[in-house]
Image (cartoon, rainbow, N blue to C red):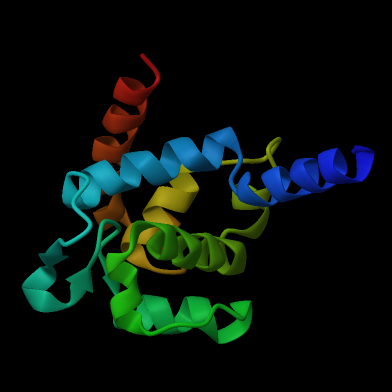
Length: 139
């Protein structure tokens, strides 16, 4: 019985993939990007799924992460979140993975503007939308 309980605990922990901060940001990004629609297509057909992932972003994320699949898998929410997680681990490493250094603005702006998106003035409006959504989600 103890072995079974330990297995359930370990398996349960495997599903707790995101910290509460990461989960909150992912949910805010999903609302801003697609109003929660997994079948969303935007940017003239260049962005797909709930997180509006472009193919170069997807390629970048899978390149070193070991995530399998095809680009169209980004229409699946769980897969799209894994892709975003891999992208953040590559370009916003400690600001995504370290709860003490977590920086939602930095990560959101990278999601919107690429690896150096946190430096781009053009991503400030996007961050304002995400921040507003984060504030809504915390109420």
